[in-house]
Length: 108
Image 1 (cartoon, helix red, strand yellow):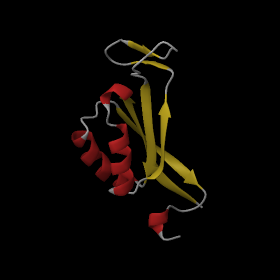
Image 2 (cartoon, rainbow, N blue to C red):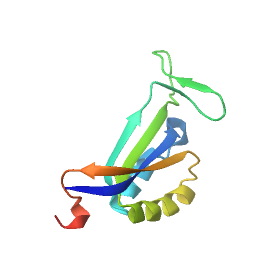
Image 3 (cartoon, rainbow, N blue to C red):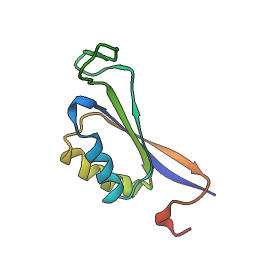
Image 4 (tube, rainbow, N blue to C red):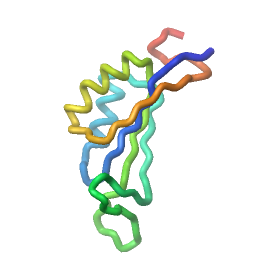
């Protein structure tokens, strides 16, 4: 079985302190499929500042990536809510195909 979805990647920084609430909101309110959070070791944003980790760092401001996918209409609804709610500036989407079992919201 395969189905068309929209894949979303949201770029954040730990210092923004929104990741946990964003993830909880996406799961509880929008019931998105396939959500994962990655923590980066280094990254540079649009401001050109390099954010890196070292053993001497007391407070980290590392890059975070939140990814999820779902049916295009569910993703559009979720994005309309979260972009404004969490003041997100770096959100990328693209069409993708899921191959395998159905999402819990599809009744399979």
